[in-house]
Image (tube, rainbow, N blue to C red; front, side, top):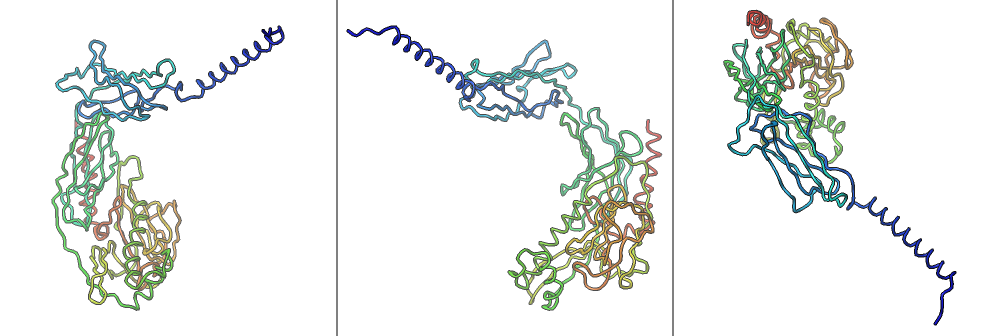
Length: 459
């Protein structure tokens, strides 16, 4: 029988020791780097404090790098604990959205202080699962905000504008706005004293019906709505049937297609017109809307404008609200709305700003040509299109009487003229109302001034 000498036994021992070291280090590295043994605790996307109206479920999301194994959620006021959820998940997911509600028939003391306790465990093998324990303060609030309409314009005309002043109060008021039946939201601005708001609203000429509500929401999701009871005055607008001619398409329309279309040579005559009247028009209206769809100021104590008269000696050559239907060879092709007032005098006539304001747009804008837009306050903007050139730049402060540009034929214009528009938070309205001093006084300025007296006398 062979006998191992001491040297051989020593070599084996060293090899075995090295093997153990490698095994331990490798095992340690595996534990350290393997997702099976990851050590990151789960997370939830909840603030430290939640306002709850007890009706709307509390939405939360459980998240973990490897997967959620179980979750337990309860509500406690320190005296009693209500279990809202206690669940193990068969299929481990890295993200689990939840909506937590009270069990039916549960009554809470609305004056008590509650805490929402969330305990989440993941599927990691590290310490039998990483755990998250978090408490969130719950403030119970089931009271709706209060709304009171202080004053308003008596009527609103289709295609026109109106004013409203109201009070909205709630200890935890989150947002307040005016919303119409079409879903359009008009921002409001704090007015005169705390808790009071005002805005201009608009009835789009393209919509047959109109309704506007003041909407107030608090932090807990409680909502209140109050109807603004305007008298609705319908108005008929012009409808035009326009037969397209080849020379018209081959001229201005083709020029615009080659300037703005990516593939201008792929269009036939009708395709060219539809691109300009529909695709390009929509793109250009997006530019106008993005420049006009907001109230810029943080608060308002007063608001006054002179009537708009942008073109000295200008005569109207096309009206607001004209619904135009285009045809070719007696076949319908396209349609559009003319949402401004076209004024003409002499070629290259000076365009004047009738009121102070700030320039929010001054650039080439497709069918509008060189396009200038000025903000005058309370969500009201004046629009000037087809200019030969602009004398102002974005951000310029404009004073009443300043020359801002000259009339021209840029964009989709035929003959030198000014396309003049008034826009309220993204809605084009009748310019004629804002060129009428009497209308402005009765429907806007007197409403605001009379509201101040009501607010002063309100206890």
